[in-house]
Length: 309
Image 1 (spheres, rainbow, N blue to C red):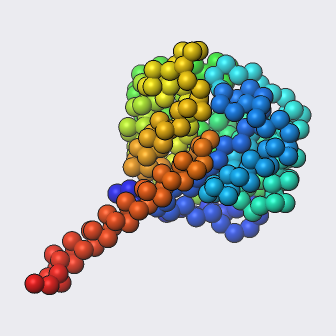
Image 2 (cartoon, rainbow, N blue to C red):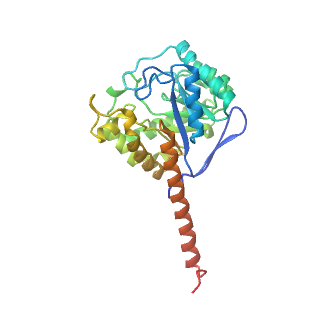
């Protein structure tokens, strides 16, 4: 049934908890970078970034995902100091203006620690917290953590797209191993969220295979984040993958279609650039879920003889 992915409750470092239920949470992407594939350079100062984040909140975002390093294919690493200069002023100012959940998108535990101290709530790491420096950070700050599947680094990942055992099987095995490794270090499984890593060390057909079989990740027993927004494989489907093709911002309708499929497959969080489009999608999906639930209740009532003559 639409959105029936079970319920999860995750402890937050600033107190209280984050409840994920039948309606998926909406995560808006805030790239404080000059080179991200879709919106690089749009938020070249903290004021512009915070203004954009507040707009996302007004439009229905449950989480704002702040990142200071592009992880697009072929991207070069960014120094810790540069990441801190890009994201910490944004997180501090946003925290003064809004109580929205804030995630920090980084592979570096030093950036993660500083972001949490500045008011962030969630760690979002495309390398699944493989750096051992994450353990003390996650031990000290009892925050939710998003573990994503990737091979290699953004610079090299597209050279590692062979999955002899099947892409979904290998993703699930990788994520289960990361969950178990962190759990053995004292990090509760109840704090973990999994992300199959659409576009990270995957070819276009493999991304579609993940989307079609996303429900397999529910075997891990953790919330699933789906992040396909404006990505290159959607451009392949739309026949716009060449340099002369449409702009990534013109892939939003395709993103909505992919996200609806992910909702049907039980995704708990959608990570997107276009928040209003996704809010509308979730409103429709929730109305469909409630209608289906009401119909089942009516069928049950009629089946029990309570439907009248």
